Length: 315
Image: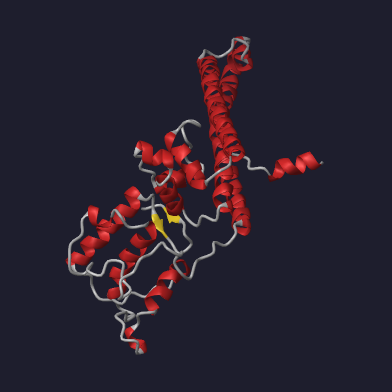
């Protein structure tokens, strides 16, 4: 019984094991881990560029390192400062992950010949033992032939309709299964906590509370924003809209709302943020800069950040 309980607590795959190690080290975001990995001995020696989206894909099970000798994988383990025992366990999960992928591929390859053989057998001529054909051949009386022909026609129509009825029934049952599964998932899915403040050390602000104070005056290039953290990109893109009076009402924007409220001009603090029900239009420069920042988030950082510290896929 003790052994069984221990197995249940153990991570079931590589993604779970990596996520638990990240959490145990107190790392708040994939961006933070990417910076640590980039500063590791292996990353500096090989001049590796550790991408945030690579770590995010590993942690969510979308991809995995090619092997335990993958340079980026080694840099991440060094960034996490894992013990030899922890590295060995993580490599074991990675090895089992590769075995499962190979087994699934072999099972698919093995199934293809069987499916082809079945299709060929089904495409052959009808069996000579078809009872309707025997009945027709044995009909001696000319008056019985029309009745037999009518029976054969009804039989053929029923046979033709049966696959269609099976298909419709399968679709209906599958739809009901999805509805039930979605209902169960919605009731079990835990609420995502949203941070009311930015993680410490992840956002550097000017004296006026801006990440990019001149984003309304100067056109930026990709090189101008490449050095910003994912949190700084998130704030910099939204401060363009805040200048125009945008109100951040969504729960996922609570950290932005708390941040910009510190600079509200209508509260007598001499700030620049004035919330408006109808925000002003963006200028051509502001629209261009918002696009440049969003492109950096989507193409280089793996998605758009929220106040939960998670990345959303770009649409």
